[in-house]
Image (tube, rainbow, N blue to C red; front, side):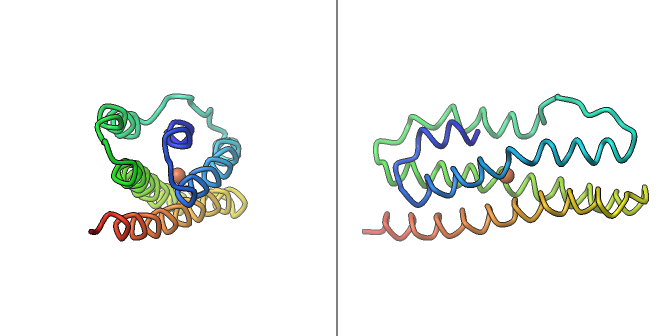
Length: 137
Ligand SMILES: [Fe+2]
């Protein structure tokens, strides 16, 4: 979803937030692969059905806004919703890590990713506040 958002957003602040999180997420996959290796498990390339649905929902509505500010607010809210979902998934994984006695290094990889998701959500919330302020008459 992030590459599509990067092309769609008009606001410099939101574009910067999306671009930086896109760079961060490029490291998330390798970190998750390290966690799988620590568990002697094979990672899957299957996409998450909830995230696919969130992206589909975004794509269905993305072109329906005549106003750029409103469109950016919609893009930011879609991104924030996805970050909430990702944070919930990392919280469950971190709970599970305790149950399976995951190594500290592997746990650190999960915490690193979770921290970047939380940072992205904080920045998106800031963008949503700013964009909402610009939309008020
Ligand atoms: Fe994310």
